[in-house]
Image (cartoon, rainbow, N blue to C red; front, top):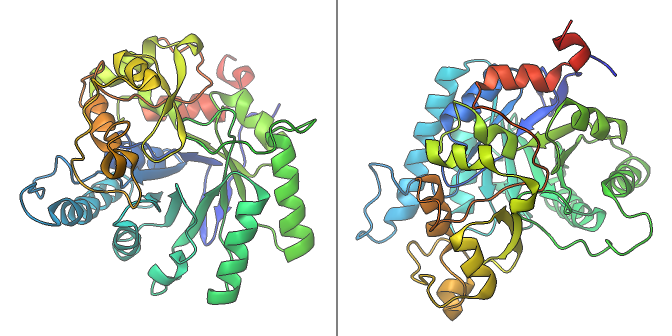
Length: 365
Protein backbone atom coordinates (compact mmCIF):
# COMPACT_ATOMS: atom_id res chain seq x y z
CA UNK A 1 0.00 0.00 0.00
CA UNK A 2 1.33 3.42 -0.95
CA UNK A 3 1.52 5.99 1.78
CA UNK A 4 0.59 9.16 -0.09
CA UNK A 5 -1.91 9.38 -2.95
CA UNK A 6 -1.14 10.77 -6.40
CA UNK A 7 -2.43 14.12 -7.73
CA UNK A 8 -5.61 14.38 -9.81
CA UNK A 9 -5.76 16.39 -13.04
CA UNK A 10 -9.17 17.58 -14.24
CA UNK A 11 -8.95 19.81 -17.28
CA UNK A 12 -6.34 22.47 -16.56
CA UNK A 13 -6.51 21.96 -12.80
CA UNK A 14 -4.37 19.67 -10.65
CA UNK A 15 -5.38 18.74 -7.11
CA UNK A 16 -2.70 17.52 -4.74
CA UNK A 17 -4.83 14.50 -3.87
CA UNK A 18 -7.37 12.49 -5.94
CA UNK A 19 -10.25 13.41 -3.64
CA UNK A 20 -13.32 15.42 -4.61
CA UNK A 21 -15.59 16.37 -1.74
CA UNK A 22 -19.19 15.44 -2.45
CA UNK A 23 -21.84 18.12 -2.89
CA UNK A 24 -24.46 17.89 -0.14
CA UNK A 25 -27.53 20.10 -0.03
CA UNK A 26 -29.08 22.08 1.53
CA UNK A 27 -26.05 23.96 2.91
CA UNK A 28 -24.23 20.88 4.15
CA UNK A 29 -21.35 21.61 1.80
CA UNK A 30 -21.06 25.37 1.51
CA UNK A 31 -18.13 27.73 1.51
CA UNK A 32 -16.55 26.60 4.79
CA UNK A 33 -16.37 22.92 3.86
CA UNK A 34 -15.48 23.41 0.21
CA UNK A 35 -12.83 26.02 0.95
CA UNK A 36 -11.26 23.90 3.69
CA UNK A 37 -11.10 20.77 1.50
CA UNK A 38 -9.50 22.78 -1.32
CA UNK A 39 -6.98 24.27 1.09
CA UNK A 40 -6.10 20.78 2.32
CA UNK A 41 -5.29 19.57 -1.20
CA UNK A 42 -8.56 18.08 -2.39
CA UNK A 43 -11.28 19.48 -4.62
CA UNK A 44 -13.89 21.37 -2.59
CA UNK A 45 -17.42 21.51 -3.98
CA UNK A 46 -20.26 23.88 -3.08
CA UNK A 47 -23.76 22.41 -3.44
CA UNK A 48 -25.76 25.14 -5.19
CA UNK A 49 -29.25 23.70 -4.72
CA UNK A 50 -31.21 25.73 -2.17
CA UNK A 51 -28.35 28.04 -1.21
CA UNK A 52 -30.60 31.07 -1.21
CA UNK A 53 -33.21 29.62 1.16
CA UNK A 54 -31.84 31.20 4.34
CA UNK A 55 -29.86 33.97 2.69
CA UNK A 56 -30.58 37.67 3.20
CA UNK A 57 -31.64 37.78 -0.47
CA UNK A 58 -34.66 35.48 -0.14
CA UNK A 59 -38.09 37.09 -0.32
CA UNK A 60 -40.72 34.35 -0.46
CA UNK A 61 -43.43 36.79 -1.47
CA UNK A 62 -41.54 38.05 -4.49
CA UNK A 63 -42.00 36.13 -7.73
CA UNK A 64 -38.75 34.47 -8.69
CA UNK A 65 -37.28 35.45 -5.35
CA UNK A 66 -35.96 31.98 -4.58
CA UNK A 67 -34.00 31.74 -7.83
CA UNK A 68 -32.58 35.24 -7.54
CA UNK A 69 -31.52 34.44 -3.98
CA UNK A 70 -29.80 31.23 -5.12
CA UNK A 71 -27.74 33.11 -7.69
CA UNK A 72 -26.66 35.83 -5.28
CA UNK A 73 -25.98 33.36 -2.47
CA UNK A 74 -23.81 31.26 -4.80
CA UNK A 75 -21.71 34.32 -5.62
CA UNK A 76 -21.24 34.91 -1.90
CA UNK A 77 -20.30 31.29 -1.20
CA UNK A 78 -17.70 31.24 -3.96
CA UNK A 79 -16.10 34.43 -2.61
CA UNK A 80 -16.02 33.01 0.92
CA UNK A 81 -14.55 29.69 -0.24
CA UNK A 82 -11.88 31.48 -2.27
CA UNK A 83 -10.95 33.56 0.76
CA UNK A 84 -10.31 30.30 2.66
CA UNK A 85 -8.34 28.75 -0.19
CA UNK A 86 -6.93 31.37 -2.60
CA UNK A 87 -5.11 28.81 -4.74
CA UNK A 88 -7.13 25.63 -4.18
CA UNK A 89 -9.50 23.94 -6.59
CA UNK A 90 -13.11 24.88 -5.87
CA UNK A 91 -16.10 23.57 -7.77
CA UNK A 92 -19.85 23.98 -7.81
CA UNK A 93 -22.43 21.23 -8.11
CA UNK A 94 -25.50 22.15 -10.15
CA UNK A 95 -28.61 19.97 -10.29
CA UNK A 96 -29.81 19.54 -13.88
CA UNK A 97 -33.35 18.82 -12.72
CA UNK A 98 -33.76 22.28 -11.14
CA UNK A 99 -35.33 25.25 -12.90
CA UNK A 100 -32.32 27.52 -12.33
CA UNK A 101 -29.74 24.98 -13.50
CA UNK A 102 -28.53 27.05 -16.46
CA UNK A 103 -28.35 30.28 -14.42
CA UNK A 104 -26.38 28.64 -11.61
CA UNK A 105 -23.97 27.01 -14.10
CA UNK A 106 -23.35 30.38 -15.75
CA UNK A 107 -22.96 32.08 -12.38
CA UNK A 108 -20.49 29.47 -11.13
CA UNK A 109 -18.33 29.89 -14.23
CA UNK A 110 -18.47 33.69 -14.15
CA UNK A 111 -17.61 33.85 -10.46
CA UNK A 112 -14.43 31.80 -10.72
CA UNK A 113 -15.38 28.19 -10.03
CA UNK A 114 -12.63 25.88 -11.28
CA UNK A 115 -15.04 23.12 -12.17
CA UNK A 116 -18.75 22.39 -12.44
CA UNK A 117 -20.13 19.03 -11.40
CA UNK A 118 -23.63 18.08 -12.50
CA UNK A 119 -26.09 15.55 -11.15
CA UNK A 120 -29.74 14.49 -11.42
CA UNK A 121 -30.10 14.66 -15.19
CA UNK A 122 -28.29 14.79 -18.51
CA UNK A 123 -26.34 18.07 -18.89
CA UNK A 124 -26.55 18.01 -22.67
CA UNK A 125 -26.27 21.82 -23.02
CA UNK A 126 -23.77 22.51 -20.24
CA UNK A 127 -20.91 23.62 -22.55
CA UNK A 128 -23.21 26.33 -23.92
CA UNK A 129 -23.57 27.88 -20.47
CA UNK A 130 -19.82 28.00 -19.83
CA UNK A 131 -18.59 28.80 -23.36
CA UNK A 132 -17.02 32.11 -22.27
CA UNK A 133 -14.97 30.38 -19.57
CA UNK A 134 -12.87 27.65 -21.26
CA UNK A 135 -10.77 27.00 -18.14
CA UNK A 136 -13.80 25.79 -16.19
CA UNK A 137 -13.68 21.99 -16.13
CA UNK A 138 -17.01 20.23 -16.75
CA UNK A 139 -17.63 17.01 -14.84
CA UNK A 140 -20.99 15.25 -15.31
CA UNK A 141 -22.16 12.49 -12.98
CA UNK A 142 -23.03 9.18 -14.65
CA UNK A 143 -23.98 5.72 -13.48
CA UNK A 144 -23.36 3.73 -16.67
CA UNK A 145 -21.49 3.73 -19.96
CA UNK A 146 -24.79 4.38 -21.76
CA UNK A 147 -25.23 7.70 -19.95
CA UNK A 148 -21.62 8.70 -20.62
CA UNK A 149 -22.06 7.87 -24.31
CA UNK A 150 -25.14 10.09 -24.61
CA UNK A 151 -23.29 13.04 -23.08
CA UNK A 152 -20.14 12.54 -25.16
CA UNK A 153 -22.07 12.24 -28.42
CA UNK A 154 -24.13 15.36 -27.71
CA UNK A 155 -21.12 17.46 -26.65
CA UNK A 156 -18.99 16.34 -29.59
CA UNK A 157 -21.67 17.02 -32.19
CA UNK A 158 -22.85 20.36 -30.77
CA UNK A 159 -19.78 21.82 -29.08
CA UNK A 160 -16.80 19.84 -30.39
CA UNK A 161 -15.65 18.97 -26.89
CA UNK A 162 -15.79 16.19 -24.31
CA UNK A 163 -16.17 16.22 -20.52
CA UNK A 164 -13.06 16.90 -18.45
CA UNK A 165 -13.98 14.07 -16.09
CA UNK A 166 -16.82 11.85 -14.99
CA UNK A 167 -18.18 11.30 -11.50
CA UNK A 168 -19.12 7.61 -11.64
CA UNK A 169 -21.88 6.81 -9.17
CA UNK A 170 -21.65 3.46 -7.42
CA UNK A 171 -25.40 2.84 -7.37
CA UNK A 172 -25.00 0.21 -4.65
CA UNK A 173 -23.35 2.61 -2.19
CA UNK A 174 -23.83 6.31 -3.07
CA UNK A 175 -25.77 8.55 -0.70
CA UNK A 176 -28.77 10.70 -1.50
CA UNK A 177 -30.48 10.13 -4.84
CA UNK A 178 -29.17 7.19 -6.81
CA UNK A 179 -29.93 5.65 -10.18
CA UNK A 180 -31.37 2.17 -10.28
CA UNK A 181 -28.69 -0.28 -11.39
CA UNK A 182 -30.23 -1.74 -14.53
CA UNK A 183 -27.37 -4.22 -14.83
CA UNK A 184 -27.20 -5.17 -11.18
CA UNK A 185 -28.56 -8.68 -11.83
CA UNK A 186 -25.85 -9.44 -14.39
CA UNK A 187 -23.22 -11.94 -13.18
CA UNK A 188 -20.13 -10.12 -12.02
CA UNK A 189 -21.76 -6.69 -11.88
CA UNK A 190 -19.81 -4.30 -9.66
CA UNK A 191 -18.38 -0.82 -9.73
CA UNK A 192 -15.21 -2.41 -11.13
CA UNK A 193 -17.32 -3.70 -14.03
CA UNK A 194 -18.67 -0.19 -14.69
CA UNK A 195 -15.17 1.36 -14.55
CA UNK A 196 -13.89 -1.18 -17.07
CA UNK A 197 -16.82 -0.52 -19.41
CA UNK A 198 -16.30 3.22 -19.26
CA UNK A 199 -12.54 2.95 -19.75
CA UNK A 200 -13.04 0.70 -22.78
CA UNK A 201 -15.54 3.10 -24.34
CA UNK A 202 -13.42 6.20 -23.76
CA UNK A 203 -10.06 4.76 -24.79
CA UNK A 204 -11.03 2.33 -27.54
CA UNK A 205 -14.02 4.04 -29.15
CA UNK A 206 -13.15 7.71 -28.56
CA UNK A 207 -9.38 7.42 -28.20
CA UNK A 208 -9.24 9.67 -25.14
CA UNK A 209 -8.28 9.37 -21.49
CA UNK A 210 -10.84 11.10 -19.24
CA UNK A 211 -10.52 10.92 -15.44
CA UNK A 212 -13.05 8.65 -13.73
CA UNK A 213 -13.91 9.63 -10.15
CA UNK A 214 -15.85 7.04 -8.17
CA UNK A 215 -18.62 8.21 -5.84
CA UNK A 216 -20.16 6.01 -3.16
CA UNK A 217 -18.80 3.69 -0.50
CA UNK A 218 -15.51 5.51 0.12
CA UNK A 219 -14.83 6.00 3.82
CA UNK A 220 -11.10 5.64 4.50
CA UNK A 221 -7.65 5.39 2.95
CA UNK A 222 -8.12 1.69 2.24
CA UNK A 223 -11.32 2.38 0.28
CA UNK A 224 -9.50 5.00 -1.79
CA UNK A 225 -6.67 2.62 -2.60
CA UNK A 226 -9.23 -0.06 -3.50
CA UNK A 227 -10.97 2.22 -6.01
CA UNK A 228 -7.69 3.38 -7.53
CA UNK A 229 -6.68 -0.26 -7.82
CA UNK A 230 -9.85 -0.93 -9.84
CA UNK A 231 -8.82 1.67 -12.39
CA UNK A 232 -10.37 4.86 -11.03
CA UNK A 233 -8.41 8.11 -11.17
CA UNK A 234 -9.97 9.53 -8.03
CA UNK A 235 -12.82 9.32 -5.57
CA UNK A 236 -15.66 11.52 -4.41
CA UNK A 237 -16.35 11.47 -0.67
CA UNK A 238 -19.46 13.01 0.84
CA UNK A 239 -20.76 11.49 4.07
CA UNK A 240 -17.37 11.30 5.73
CA UNK A 241 -16.97 15.09 5.51
CA UNK A 242 -20.19 15.72 7.42
CA UNK A 243 -18.54 15.00 10.76
CA UNK A 244 -15.98 17.77 10.37
CA UNK A 245 -15.73 21.08 12.16
CA UNK A 246 -16.00 22.99 8.89
CA UNK A 247 -19.10 21.22 7.56
CA UNK A 248 -21.72 23.93 7.04
CA UNK A 249 -24.65 22.00 8.57
CA UNK A 250 -26.02 22.39 12.11
CA UNK A 251 -23.99 20.74 14.86
CA UNK A 252 -26.96 18.50 15.70
CA UNK A 253 -26.87 17.19 12.13
CA UNK A 254 -23.20 16.30 12.52
CA UNK A 255 -23.80 14.54 15.85
CA UNK A 256 -26.62 12.50 14.33
CA UNK A 257 -24.23 11.24 11.64
CA UNK A 258 -21.54 10.65 14.24
CA UNK A 259 -23.78 8.18 16.10
CA UNK A 260 -25.18 6.46 12.99
CA UNK A 261 -24.39 2.86 12.04
CA UNK A 262 -24.91 0.84 8.87
CA UNK A 263 -28.12 -0.53 10.38
CA UNK A 264 -29.56 3.01 10.27
CA UNK A 265 -29.39 3.22 6.46
CA UNK A 266 -32.80 3.11 4.73
CA UNK A 267 -34.09 3.68 1.20
CA UNK A 268 -36.63 6.49 1.02
CA UNK A 269 -38.82 7.47 -1.97
CA UNK A 270 -38.35 10.97 -3.35
CA UNK A 271 -40.53 13.44 -5.27
CA UNK A 272 -37.97 13.45 -8.08
CA UNK A 273 -38.94 9.84 -8.83
CA UNK A 274 -35.67 8.25 -7.70
CA UNK A 275 -34.89 6.37 -4.50
CA UNK A 276 -32.64 7.98 -1.91
CA UNK A 277 -30.32 6.64 0.79
CA UNK A 278 -30.83 8.27 4.13
CA UNK A 279 -30.63 7.71 7.86
CA UNK A 280 -33.61 6.31 9.70
CA UNK A 281 -35.65 8.84 11.66
CA UNK A 282 -39.31 9.71 12.07
CA UNK A 283 -39.47 11.51 8.73
CA UNK A 284 -37.88 8.62 6.81
CA UNK A 285 -40.24 6.08 8.36
CA UNK A 286 -43.26 8.19 7.44
CA UNK A 287 -41.99 8.72 3.89
CA UNK A 288 -41.40 5.00 3.39
CA UNK A 289 -45.01 4.13 4.23
CA UNK A 290 -46.39 7.18 2.40
CA UNK A 291 -47.88 8.72 5.53
CA UNK A 292 -50.46 11.46 5.07
CA UNK A 293 -48.80 13.31 7.95
CA UNK A 294 -46.01 14.55 5.69
CA UNK A 295 -46.44 18.14 4.59
CA UNK A 296 -46.98 18.31 0.83
CA UNK A 297 -46.70 22.07 0.37
CA UNK A 298 -44.21 23.05 -2.33
CA UNK A 299 -42.12 25.89 -0.89
CA UNK A 300 -40.10 27.04 -3.91
CA UNK A 301 -41.24 25.42 -7.18
CA UNK A 302 -37.58 24.55 -7.70
CA UNK A 303 -37.71 21.34 -9.75
CA UNK A 304 -38.63 20.84 -13.40
CA UNK A 305 -40.57 17.73 -12.43
CA UNK A 306 -41.82 17.10 -8.88
CA UNK A 307 -44.33 14.56 -7.58
CA UNK A 308 -45.07 16.77 -4.59
CA UNK A 309 -45.94 19.86 -6.61
CA UNK A 310 -47.46 18.12 -9.64
CA UNK A 311 -49.47 15.32 -8.05
CA UNK A 312 -49.62 16.08 -4.34
CA UNK A 313 -47.64 12.92 -3.52
CA UNK A 314 -44.57 12.35 -1.29
CA UNK A 315 -43.20 15.62 0.21
CA UNK A 316 -41.25 18.80 -0.56
CA UNK A 317 -37.70 17.54 -0.72
CA UNK A 318 -36.16 21.00 -0.50
CA UNK A 319 -37.96 21.61 2.78
CA UNK A 320 -37.16 18.11 4.07
CA UNK A 321 -33.43 18.49 3.46
CA UNK A 322 -33.43 22.01 4.85
CA UNK A 323 -35.21 20.95 8.04
CA UNK A 324 -32.53 18.34 8.71
CA UNK A 325 -29.53 20.55 8.07
CA UNK A 326 -31.04 23.26 10.27
CA UNK A 327 -31.13 20.75 13.15
CA UNK A 328 -34.74 19.46 13.03
CA UNK A 329 -33.58 15.88 12.91
CA UNK A 330 -36.88 14.03 13.27
CA UNK A 331 -38.82 16.12 10.74
CA UNK A 332 -36.13 16.31 8.05
CA UNK A 333 -34.53 14.02 5.47
CA UNK A 334 -30.95 13.06 6.35
CA UNK A 335 -29.01 11.79 3.34
CA UNK A 336 -26.18 9.32 3.88
CA UNK A 337 -23.98 6.96 1.92
CA UNK A 338 -24.28 3.22 2.51
CA UNK A 339 -20.79 2.75 3.94
CA UNK A 340 -20.55 4.10 7.47
CA UNK A 341 -17.39 3.38 9.41
CA UNK A 342 -16.31 4.12 12.93
CA UNK A 343 -16.02 7.82 13.70
CA UNK A 344 -15.42 8.74 17.32
CA UNK A 345 -15.47 12.53 17.14
CA UNK A 346 -15.88 15.62 15.05
CA UNK A 347 -12.51 16.51 13.52
CA UNK A 348 -11.08 19.23 11.34
CA UNK A 349 -10.98 18.86 7.56
CA UNK A 350 -7.19 19.10 7.70
CA UNK A 351 -7.02 16.18 10.13
CA UNK A 352 -9.44 14.11 8.09
CA UNK A 353 -7.56 14.74 4.86
CA UNK A 354 -4.34 13.60 6.52
CA UNK A 355 -6.10 10.43 7.62
CA UNK A 356 -7.53 9.83 4.16
CA UNK A 357 -4.35 10.45 2.22
CA UNK A 358 -1.80 8.59 4.28
CA UNK A 359 -1.69 4.93 5.15
CA UNK A 360 -1.94 3.68 8.73
CA UNK A 361 1.65 2.50 8.49
CA UNK A 362 2.81 6.09 8.00
CA UNK A 363 0.38 7.61 10.49
CA UNK A 364 1.40 5.42 13.39
CA UNK A 365 5.18 5.23 12.97
